[in-house]
Image (tube, rainbow, N blue to C red; front, side, top):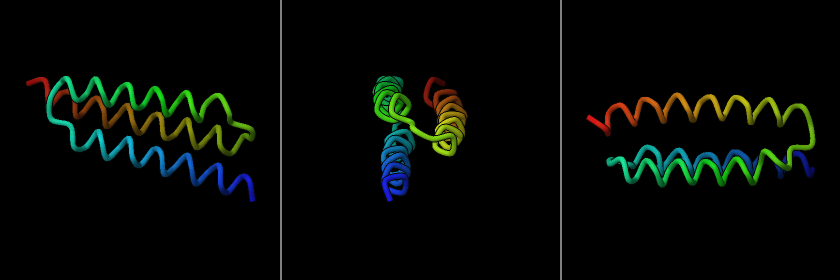
Length: 77
């Protein structure tokens, strides 16, 4: 049960970071998104207790950086 709650929190917090990323339109807002992502990492990466969640976090990090780089290329033009 604890693993399901932990995984649910990982995804719900990540979804919030992605929504903030998708709504950002300026480089200042992207800086704020980066801070939000760092907080998400701090909250979830330090507390990972099992291998499955480590893999989930690794994949979510990669997804964030791909989306962030695409968004920052569009916002900084």
